Every structure is written in C-alpha cells, then in structure tokens.
Length: 82
Image (cartoon, rainbow, N blue to C red; front, side, top):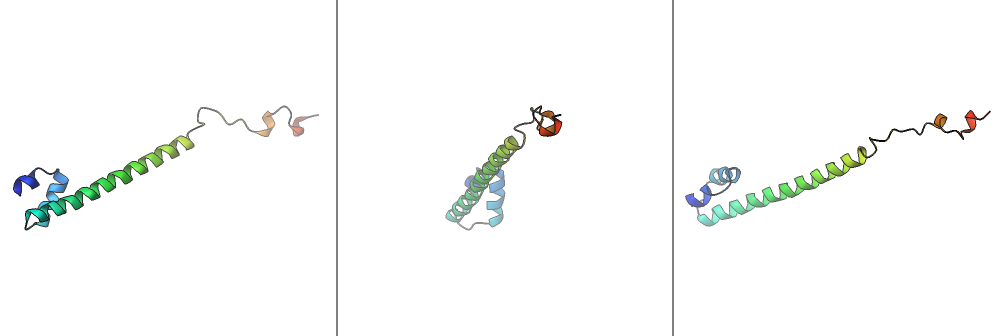
C-alpha cells in the first residue's frame, strides 16, 4: 500500500495518506474519488477558460477600428445640409 500511495501525485498522495485507509481497496477507492474530482475540476476550468477567451475576443474584436459613427461625420447628415 505504501508503494501505491507513494506513486500518486503529491496533491492526491497527501489526501489519501490523511484519510488513513485501512485496506488497499480503501486506498484505491479514495484515490479514484480524488482523481475524479481533479478531472472534473480540470474540465470545468477548461470550459471557463474557453468562455473567457470567447468573451475577450468579443469585447476586443473592434479595437483596431475607431468608432467614427458620430452623426456629424457623415456628409449626408440632414443637420449639416444648408
């Protein structure tokens, strides 16, 4: 059991050790639950990162183009006709 726990990633190894499993099967069960949580967290993080990238692209999409939609800049504007 020590070799199994010692071969786990450090974040999971510490949690399995702290759980003090009584049997090898219990150590495996705890490890599987922790690995599932890590995997779920990673998927959620990737989803959030993708959403942020998408939002950033939408918000910064036209940063290279000045906003010249001021009505006074159009020659056909009724207010500027004499």
